[in-house]
Structures are given as C-alpha cells and as structure tokens.
Length: 455
Image 1 (tube, rainbow, N blue to C red):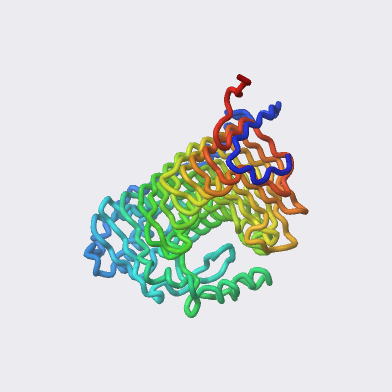
Image 2: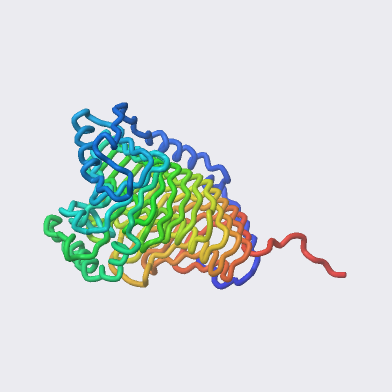
C-alpha cells in the first residue's frame, strides 16, 4: 500500500498477516539485539575520594562566585587521580564554566543548586564544540567535558542555566552567525578558522560531553538552559536515568546524542520547550565527511512532555541506526509523538528503528516521517527504511495519526505498523512516496465490531 490520504474520523482495521517475524508482538530478534546493546552499556565506577566543595571556599549564599572553588576542587581531583566533588545544600553562583576531567563525579546533594552567571565574557576563551551539527569554536558549554573518561553528574540537586533573560534572547540575533557556520560546513573551511564566541550570538549548551567515554548523569534536575540541555557528542557508553527537565527557553532539547553510541536513557521526566530526545549525526557535508553513525540508543520507561517526544534528525547526515523506544508514556502534551525528519541536503540514512509500547495523550501528529523537512534541499536524499512500530497508542490526534512523506527519487520503505490504536484523528493516514508499508491490527477512530443486520 503506497498511499492512504485524508481518511477523516474513519475507523480502520487492516489485518495483513505476514510470515515475517518482525511483525510479532514480541520479536525475538529485536529483543536479542536490544539486550546485546544493553550489555555494552555500563555506568562508570565512582571515585572513593570525597571532595567537599566548601573546603575550597564555596558558599551557597547565591551571591558568592564559586567558580574559583570549583577550579580548586578539580585541581585536587586531578592530583588524586579522580574525585567525587560533593556540593552541599545551598545556592551556588558560578561565573563561568565547569570543565570536568576524567574520573570526576559532580555530586549535587538534595537542596544544592548551581546557578550560572549571565556575563558572556565568563565563558571565554572559546572552546571546540559543535553547533547545530557543525564543528566550531564558541562560548564554552556551562558544564563541559572534553576527551574525558569516567565522568558523572549525580545527586538530587538542580543545574540552573539562568538564561531566560540573557543567553536565551540571543535566538533573535543568531541568524548571521548561524548562516556563516553552515557556509563553513558546506565549504569545508578548516575548523581552526571557524571561530565564533565574542561578537556572535550562538548560544552555548548547558551540558556537553565531547569525545568522552563512560558517562553517567543521574537524578539531577536541569532548568533554564541557554540552548540544548545535554549534548552527547562523539561519545560512547552513556547512562542517563531519573533526570528531570524544566527547560522552557528556545531550543531547550533534553538529550541530543550526536555521532554517539551505546546510550541508555531511562526513567526520565521530560518537560521541555523543544524535543525531549533528538538523535543527530552531523549536518550536510561535514556529517557525511565525519561518517560516525549515531547508533545503539535505548530510550525506555520515560514520561514525554514538550514539543516532540523522540526525534531523529534533522541533522543526521552520518546516519542513525539501532534506536529502541520502549515502554514510554506521557507527562503532558507533545506536538508530535515520534518524528523522523530529514531533507535532501542531508544524505545518510535512518534505519532499524523500533518503537514498542509507547503511549501519548493529546498530540498534533502521532507518528511522522518526512524526507523533505522545511521543504528544502537537493542532491543528497536520505534512505529511510526498516522502521518497526508495535503497540503505539494516542488518545487524541489533532491533525494526522500516521504520516510518511518520502522523496520521489528515494522512497521511504519497509515500514511495519502493528497494534496501533488512536482514538480520534482529523486525518488517519497520509502516505506519499512510500512503499512496502505493512499493517497488522490498526484502529484509528472507533473500532468497528459486530456488523449491523437487516431488521
């Protein structure tokens, strides 16, 4: 079936029986593949060296600059070969970034709150980072780990980017530098010449792990971010659990894994003004050149709330594969539930995506694939195939329940829908440039039961 369109408020029951095991409710090959990935993900061991931040002059009075105390504590950790920096209850102003190093744990105890200062000069000199899929030098992320192993951020404290009235306002001014960065990407400008920072308005990330291994982020609350909340860049073996988000500024994505692999995101309470999880793999020329696939990512037992639940793209030019979204529900409204997006500037692929037992309440669109995001691009179509959606439920869909928008020269293919139930939708199904779409137990609208008979 290549196209269903504008089936408003109709109940659809399509039973297409296939011998292919991928349509089974419990797919042994999927479970085996997922469990093999889980076996590769192990949280780091935490250092036994306890470092009390207050021993280095820290004061949680919301007024004292605690940047010097953090720097001294990190020097102590370096001398000891690792350490666990304990941040007691209090409000800690920090005028500048925290640069984590290997074998260091930042332990924010319950009642502890880090509040980052709002002077951009404090986040210079510029550091190597990535901004919307392009490598460049920019203001330092507020918490930044570069080429570090065994790094953790734990505890029931809060990390507050304090950016609503400061860095967040840069969104309106970023266009010239955003355009310049993309031009440098397309022209393969040497990275050392891509210097932004002062005089530009590219907002820094709240937390970034760059070329790191063995990462844990657990129990903390992240709020008021200047840009993306947690950027996992060219990193591997990452565990994120029981994190909470209250992030409502522009582009406040929750987790953004990019060029990264072997990641477990579980038991998260999302509340973001943007994507809850956005899986990326570089933009356009640079992404294709870098060629590091984002893969082996498991998202489970989460509560979605915000713009979109789980997104792949749109910066995904190196490819994304082996993503599992399982046993998740909603904490509130999402514009779209599951959203796969690319355009013909990207290239790359999206494949082997598994969505199992996921529920949304009210959304604009339930499940959406587009190969023509923003209606732009040419020359590098994305290959999107092998997507398996089993037990997806939505209570109310304002616009479209299931959407596939392939590209005329690169159709979306091999998409399997099983056990889909959507109570109401303005448009049930809208598929264009799609092929080999398989349905097994699909109900959109009221289920049709025993047929009526003549009196």
